[in-house]
Image (cartoon, rainbow, N blue to C red; front, top):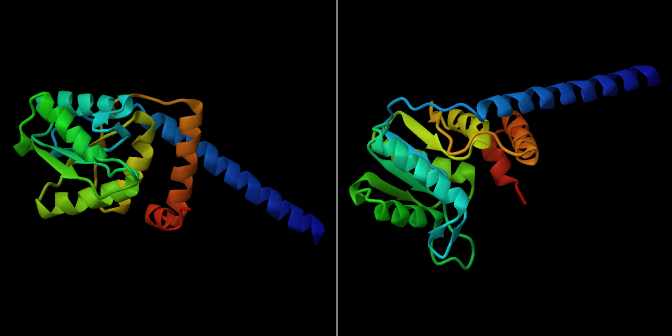
Length: 197
């Protein structure tokens, strides 16, 4: 009986390791996916801002969205991201002012600043996208987020494509994403948000 229990436990561990290895490979492969086919809107995922100035990560995403917008991939840009306690500006607003400064008309920019996580930002953007009838969207973030963004979008019922501002990521970034994607696929990304500390 003890041998049987050890075999079951060992089998479970091997299955878990195999699942994580497969997910790691999927995250790594997804990091280089870049779809620049036409869409209704570009959705830029927020990142840190410093008193209204985009951080290098956010600026990279905004510059990439600007290039996609200028090349005709989509006629509008949806900016997401809330603020941290004590911040005067949201990530979305910092992106808005940055892109206005680059010459994007205000009418082509949409601020969605009530999301304090990737899931919450996508869910908030989804409400706007659906209400305006924008079906096909291109998600802009860092490449190592691609697999999670695609999985979250699928959970929200949207078939979105990705065009990252960077490709790949560090081993630590890819490993963290692997854990998040693996867990989210099992329990659901919405549930992960509700039970986070």
